[in-house]
Image (tube, rainbow, N blue to C red; front, side, top):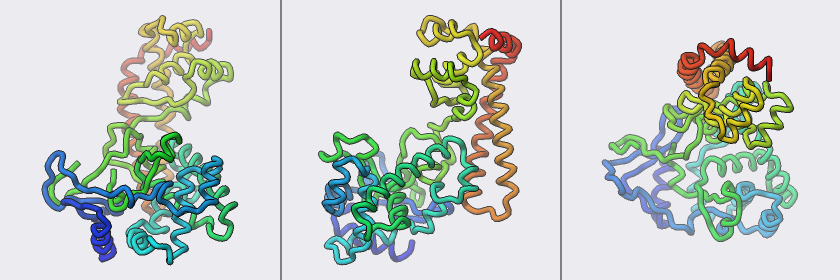
Length: 380
């Protein structure tokens, strides 16, 4: 690692941060992470950070205007922390500036963020994201715009769009879940803190010179791509989202029924099988309303309709595979082969494999249901 990381590690320890058997290291295509410097035993503490060093709503730059905006509900905790970092970055005379600047020196650069985060990608590349990732990025944009609009009203001469965007994404990708008395009553998404040194950890191996990881939680790879700019090799919580295939085929009346029953949206294949929400939606698409209502109410097992439902799902997966093939052709035709394009190709390859695996399962189960499905659709 370069000298900046050594300086930061030394400075961190003078601030009371404890570091045991770990050190920062670069990983090809994945930025900076943590490796163990010697074998680690189960239960061994790798690091400790004093609460006073965390950046939270309690310890962030205390600008009364920002605090009032937070209290009024016009800015999120996420947005306040980003604005606070912007202020601290522009005030080198601040008491904590020396420590903070040492920490800042090892953060990803603006260029790193632009390459890694789909929110900052060109529109043509964002359109090649998986459907769920696109939805998440659109929601990120909405939240960022709202937070910036609130911040710039109270800090018109101190917060610029590019600088705020950069710090907003830093907060988005480097915070830990943390509850304080000031955030206990806020939504879970607003209980966050920036944690020095431990923010090196990536999404476990314990042999010397191997990367030490933490869990990002039960999130799909489409989520991790949109929120953090990476796609893991393996993800036990990954699934195959189907909203973009099912919802356009739902009539207004069917949509109203699904919404009333609490089953509108969030459809997925989990480990090659449709989740219960997907089962409910597919049964409404292919079966009579009476049988569907009995299934929803738990009065009908649905075993008799299983082949018809699986045949419908097989048709949808065939359409999905054609969509994936179209995107892959676009990606393979690009000449530059940028990191973003390689990342997209990697994720779509995973999706393609998931579709193939799922299709083999549901096709075998639904091979005899196609003709019956047409009869049900006609009589629904």
